[in-house]
Length: 151
Image (cartoon, rainbow, N blue to C red; front, side, top):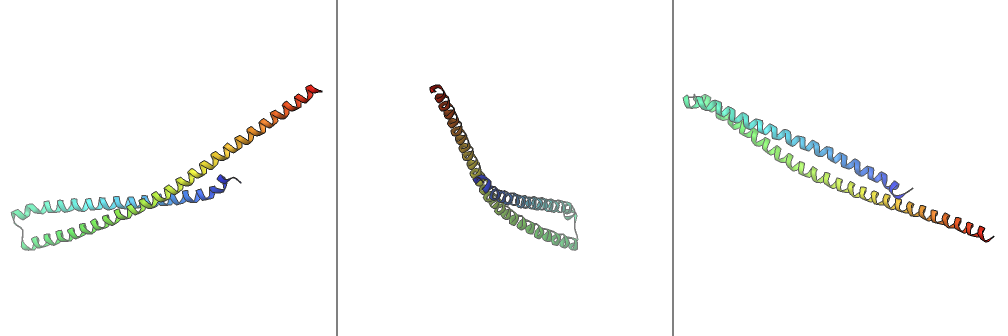
């Protein structure tokens, strides 16, 4: 068994780890995108709600309505802050996943280079061996033809 064949299972494990890390990275990216979208929706809703109720506020709003409006905006701001916190955590998690993926990827590439180098060396050795065998055959033929001429 050649060295490249012996390294095949190790390479397979490294590729599997890289693939899993890439899947985890992809999931993390989707979470970040979902949370960004959710934050944008909340901010847009807050702007829309505030704009909708700013007109009645100038025309007159009861104290009860003003109180409810402020409470709702306060609660909405809290939700927005929580979504910003979740997004920040998700981005940090994404960076960690990206580093993990890059690490497994570099290991897989390094192993692939080693296997490629081993294959190249094996092919070089095979070529040299075949050339040596061919040279020996040619020399034997020349010697046997040379002996035939002397007889």
